[in-house]
Image (cartoon, rainbow, N blue to C red):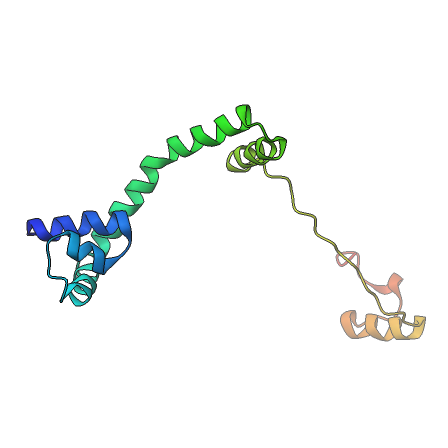
Length: 134
């Protein structure tokens, strides 16, 4: 069971992210705020994480609304473009990143290729390779 001070600490920590300041806001002594804040942060770690996740989830609609408003009404063309790109990215429509591929091969003589073929298949001529391999 949590005390009112502990509940106040969790709430303050989720808002500030500062354990010492949160301990003071919750009513703990300034002299012990660093130590107490650290202890409380560790003691209620999972609860703090859950609360912060919920806060982030709750803010998603407002953030999306803000991005949408920027895409439609921003005076800067660059801001409108970036907001539009952000919306498309989040919708899964991000353009594929360019990947440069280069293929290198060694110039081998016919004899070297025949030796390699024999090592791999046991045959020296391509015609000798069983049909299943082709």
